[in-house]
Image 1 (cartoon, rainbow, N blue to C red):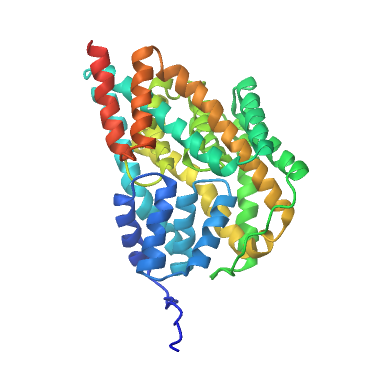
Image 2 (image 1 turned 180 degrees about the vertical axis):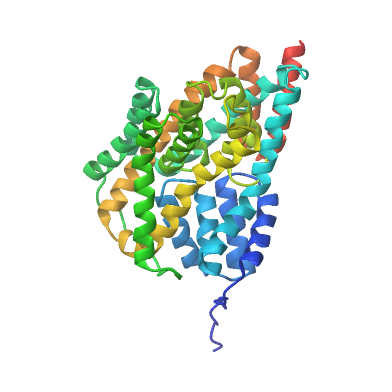
Length: 405
């Protein structure tokens, strides 16, 4: 009998430049959102390059889903870290993020220069497609994160809390509620089989990075209140959003909207139009932050504002992913950690459900024609599996047609 050989795993190290080029290609071609990105990564790093086996990659994905922040970008940062150290982590993030960030900044400039002259119909079409995109995200997340009555109840209660307290404080309260409720009511969760991740850093370095994360999260609001500077205020708002977003890029919508629209940094119409346009570009949805930074009325804006917001919203991912990696094997064995995470994930569904109502639905659906256009966009996304960029283009055309007639 012929023995079945184990798949060969490439354990050699890579250069930061080679990591950058690999992730740049992924950043230019990875359409479809975070779940699709993880599929692209698996094809590239498990099947094609054999950098990891299936269990190691699954364990890495589990780590990044456990942490707040954009899961696909965090997986990329971790892959770069494991292959080429700290420089590799930065190279992976830069390659994957730069294409969509540049595209979103250029869209912001186009909005500023030509938005009024092109008419408002296409802009409203982008707000309508945001309804379909968020509705699809809510439905998909409900299936995986609230599969039972208890967690579905957590989600609805969290949504009510966010609507009752329409600010960043309400969203933070909903996340805390989910964690406490999970700890109290979600027990006996089956442990996930895991393997030991290949690491290139010490626990001491991990502790230092985690300490920096919490120091910035707790200290930046104090600094922003003590020194009234627009740049500090913007950095604090986007760092907080990047630190508290559980469940993927779509969940950043309510946190950012509560941070940038009420103080008048960006109008609600421009916010939703940019969110709709972000569905049409490859790479991480968090590059929406670059659009907001470029669009801001007060300085810093333009390229400087885009870079500031982009660094602020992704910095927590660097600190958390690289900081937690040395402790992940021990942490995920703990049943209480699993219970807290399950409760937080259920609350995340509630956050997105509340965002679907406000600001997405209230700003996008103004009449029957808007509702019909949103239903059509949802049908294309959910049932026909149409590429998101094409649905965005069709919705913009539909919005212009509705405005013309």
